[in-house]
Length: 390
Image (cartoon, rainbow, N blue to C red; front, side, top):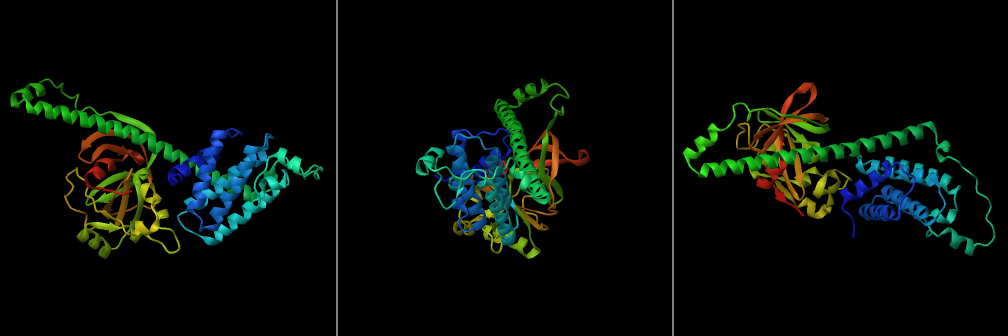
């Protein structure tokens, strides 16, 4: 069964950043499944398909031989890094794809000089060293020995490889940090819901009981601010009506600027067609993160997400008619659209937050220069107004 694209990318990134030089059978099996999934997904994109076909052959050789080949591991990590870099590039550039594939093939040819050619030939099935010895009793000419394949690379190629791996490491770190922060935020939300339930139970006992309960609250304790540190977590600061809010980058499936006419249309119809995110010569599903990225283009073009209106901080109960941007947010299979203005070019980092319950806002985030902005709880909003897609 094909793996979801998000799980596929996570498996490959984890292996790229692994510090050990061995790949256990279990890890190899998961990695081969990931390669198979990404190849199936990109059958019509030659560079990605061919790069991961080479990865399959390389990993098959590593798994089948008992010999230790650090050069093969080096090459596999680099090929995976280039493949993921092409996948995550927001702009599809056929020339860049072709150039990357040529570079991979060139380094692949260098690697084949260090090991038996048949084991890594993409036109042939990988065979074990024992089977090769049986089928070819005559000793083969000794291959040119290359102690370190990286020595064959130009300085420019080394820099490109290092940059690609650094970018991937940062991307993985961002994902880990976002997941950590999401758990912290969810813990806060659960606590708020429990407090709300207790308050509702107390109200059922009547005004007298409520007065007694209120008199037992220690002055100042309920208003005490608890500020918590968190790993630097990316968010987008946008404006809805006159309120500046933050949305975790992890929660955003896609975003784009829109003109006044398009914004008015979205407000009038109350829906945002996903086909509006289409780009020329680029798969629609690749424009999104999350569950939408796993849907084929044809059905994806038919989906229209509801325009959602966050509640809290005295926000009007209607979409922002001065908006010039739309953000698609997601959580699991729930997705929805938010109209906003002042979409930034780059995200900013949240380094700490404090609890402050206000409808769809559970915490206040601290960003650059300790600026405080309410952080949208997309889970709450999507449960109320989102569309389940899947």
